[in-house]
Length: 453
Image 1 (cartoon, helix red, strand yellow):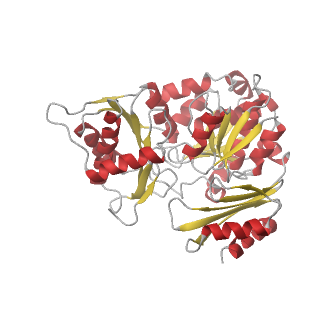
Image 2 (tube, rainbow, N blue to C red):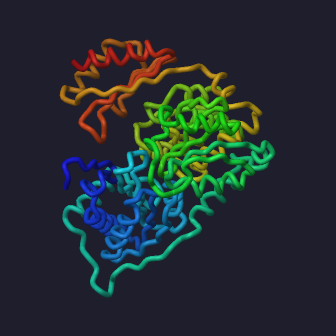
């Protein structure tokens, strides 16, 4: 195994041809299939994003699954949330998504999904890796698994979004929105275009071809959305939307062409959902510990209660289930609505954003301008010292802070916070701070570095 292959709780990612090879993919697919068989399952769902290596790895994964006697339901090139929903729809024992999400084009990855449609937790992920290392038992000639295609997965996904009581499709159609769309030539083009067509939205698009040849860095962060901002200005669109290659993250550009930051995606979605929540006097919302205060402000303004979870989609998803939350997600543009499914979903996020703008009659810049502004700063430090000692020093520096130790150390105040946590994929410590100004955020990062010496 390559020393640069990155192992996570629910899968692995690496550079195609160096870290990630067809042999590795086949072995881990066989291990996931054996895990499914061990839990009484008989079939799995397989899907992928549009990367050029995806078809090769899908063939390898199919062979691996068949080699342990598991039936493969192939949904093709689709959004990650579409695969998660297909796992639940087919009552499959697991799902495998071949996608490196927002990583550059030379990367690909395996993401393991459990029968509940949520990415595998640490225990299950470790069990699959142990099976891969030991070599899963293979089927004989008369026990080889079969395959089938599911061509309707995206349509079912969009049907479910439009059937949600949280989405007023008629109100959206009445506004006759014009959206500028950038799908970075990932898996999002067909699904997003189909959604907008059904909502009566006019689209001006770039990078809609799902060929996996990313024309820019694929992560939908503000510095990568210059072309989308220009498209908004040139086309006169009401809003710009960008998704990442596997379509679980949504970023927004306002009507002036200005990227507003991914945290606002979840914040506005929260406002859209809580405005229509009629059954719970204080609806629960879950976000991770590094999500912006713009989300906390939205929850407070709408009379909800915010619960913070450790960083990572699976952690947030399981907290949503445990807390019976009405909505949740991450500040990277990932919106999770458990009434649909417990996973980040960019098409859902787009529908909720348009829903909120339609009902309020406001422009995106007006929505952003009505809330307090914050600046997030992210930094890294070498992971060489005693983290617990660093946490103790930070505690002594800030005795007035609200303290959370579920994922490293998060110190919080009403208008700022500092989060220090070990990375799950690199030998570093992540330092993240948010405050009303850049100077104040930098000061918090500086104190964290000081405590680490």
